[in-house]
Length: 446
Ligand SMILES: NCCC[C@H](NC(=O)CCC(=O)O)C(=O)O
Image 1: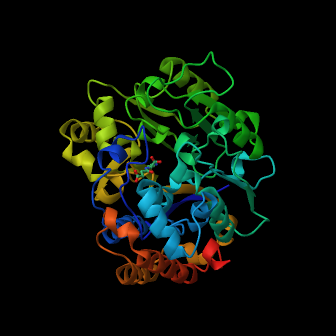
Image 2: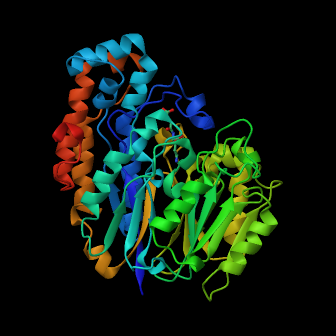
């Protein structure tokens, strides 16, 4: 079956800010006190979408979430009008308020895990929203994520949506950031590789000692079951706990797969030689499999973390060649830039690179690959997607005007006391639901 990959990029929300909320994510911690620029952030994301669309690729748009999350503040004991809740939270616990204002839903690689119909027993595309329970601010996402996915992929004939896994660390699930798929082409039978950070029940498997392992083996198993993956379509591999302790908080900070190519660091997986052998033995395609392991003496783990080389998107162009969509930090890092030039010159399907300025997102630990959720769709499935979430030139123009109308160009700690920010933010999203024809998806609309 022929299929295309659609990248659904998260639109950065109007309250994008740096609050240092993600222990284990080096960029988030080091920018904890920085001023953010939500308008620049959303426009940087839109530029990437525009460039991908101009290359002839199918591009989708994933809406942000309503922030601040007033309901969770109520649940935590703050009462009164919205203004009073904000004033009280700002006074007693400003970081908690920042968490409730986080625009972290922009990183849609963490929104859900998606299995294309070629891999599932019932021939449907399966979605499971991630519970993201390792971080409080991200644990606020799954309900709205499910509402948005339901509004985007709203035909039950083609799409099955599963509720997020139990909201508990044993089933910690961070979505597609820990999920790679290898196949001859997007519509072919694919090997879905679930990369977990630790096991909750099996203490014999090693764990990182400093930073948390966000994805558990038990969550990955549950998703493979829910998605009705055939045995041959699933493989579970442990991430190297030593690199989690060096800031690799998701697998997509150290490995990226597309088609018959896996680009990974040589320290990405536990017992890497065995892991690679398993991947080779289980590959279902007929084309040669390219596993490109980047050695530490060319790109250190620290350079991988600061440049986000492996958080590039690896894209099959309409011509069949592959393109690396990298953050500009890769171009600025000498070792990484040299390595990319070598990669392009070598015998492998990766032939081009494009660098993007995504600094606003990068400063919170989110590169090009974090900003998108990949969904491989057949022609009939694509036709069943809500057409208003497809990126077009007209949609781009409309969204740029929308962002310039509603977004601020600076947010710093004092701004979160301003109740006007809530009003502006909800107004922007209310209008966006019309632009993207999503219906009522936010708690303030229900
Ligand atoms: N896939 C990239 C995710 C980045 C995200 N950063 C954050 O949530 C930082 C938020 C802050 O610190 O304000 C995370 O760590 O889950």
